[in-house]
Structures are given as C-alpha cells and as structure tokens.
Image (cartoon, rainbow, N blue to C red; front, side, top):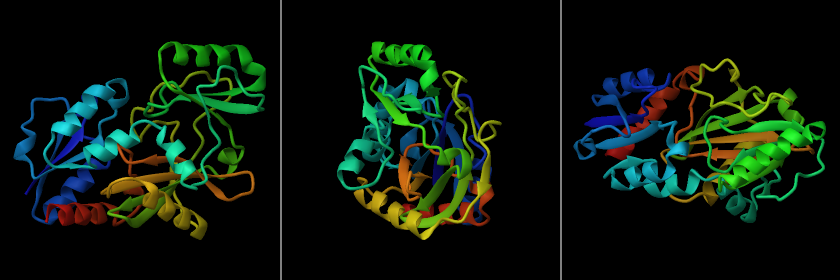
Length: 280
C-alpha cells in the first residue's frame, strides 16, 4: 500500500522523524513518501495520507482545513484537525474536568502576575509567543494589542516556575497506546521578545531528552484522550507541574506534532504498526 507523509515547502523530505518511519513501513511491505500538503499530488492515489510536518498551517489555517476536508483517507482526520488547530479546545477540556494551565482569553488588560506568557490561539512552533515579566508591561501590552488588532484570539497564561526546573513532559501515543515520553527544556526567556517559529526539532532552543512518564501523567493523559473527539492515530500530550506539583495540561497536539521518534528506540516501528492497522 502507498502512504503519503504530508509535509510543507520548507521540509520537502519531511521532518527528522520521517526517514525512520518510511524505513519501518518499508520493512512491513508498504511504500511511503514525503509529499507537500499544498502541492499538486493526487491524494486519492494514496491508501493513507499521514499529516506530519505541515508546519505552515497556522498562517494558512482556512486553506489547510479545506485541504484536509478534501483528502479521502487522512490521519489524523479533518474533524480532529479542525478541533485541534485552535487552542480554544483547552476551554472544552477544562470544562470537562481536565486540569489545564490557567488561561485568560482575549483579556483587555494584562494580569498582575510576576511572569506570564502571551500567545495566539492559532500558532505553531511558538510563533508570536513571548514570556513577559511584570516589569515589561509596555512591550507586553504592545504584543497583546497587536494580536488583538489582527483579530486573533489571544491567550494569556501564568508562567509556571516548574518549567525552568522540571521542564515539560511530552507523552506520545499511537492508536491510543502509550509509546514514549520526553522532557522538553524551557524555550521562553523573559525579555527575549516575541519568538520566531521553531522551524524543526533541531532548533537549538528545543532541547529534548528521554523521560519516564509518571503514573499521574499517564492517568491524566488517558483522561485527556477520552475527552478529545475522534480516534486519533497519533497524539502528543504536553504537561507541566502545577503549583502543587501535580501535572496540568499545556497542550494536546493532534495536528502536526514532532513525535521525537529518534529519542525512543522502537517508537518508529510502533507508529508504523499503528498505521498498518489503520490501513487494514
């Protein structure tokens, strides 16, 4: 069977997970290739189109979702992508009882927090995201006003200090089954200003190391997946410790997350097996 691994123009061969995944699918007797999502491909010719490094989607969201709706066999599905590409899904998960990072939505004024993060609800790779301190109220207010002036939904969250010590824990699931976890070191520095997009997982700001998931993180991840729509083929769930040390949800990534396969031996084979299960 033929599998297209959807990517974007700046990564024509896919991200750094792609070669290992193509090799594992080949070992199982299936052909796979990286294909630009906005290129002239005949998507109906593929038995499955796997959304992976489509990292320009956030600046072309309407076009991207229209494309997803036209692809006959897509994973994750167009329904899942439409729900997950706007971080307003955190409101829904919070209402369902999932502990999420406290968030102010479209505030007219900045909160009186020591440190906080301002970001748009539609963004990828930390684009247009910045960490500000209370002493940086003027540039922070300008950042907030710019995003609001562009008609974008704005999120303001407290910067949780545990990010600087424990970092984020990213749990990766394939077809609902836990595969592996990694630690993501902090990338936002107070006073650094608005972040350019992290172009790929080789970005020097994004330091990744293997990590064992805790029982609390695994239990919360199960609750997050149960509250999400559809039946995603792949999922990455990012947690950080809250003030009491318990994990809280930062993001649920169902659209185009890096899966960090090279940090977990056997994970590319697990993903390939999950793909073949969907094919069959």
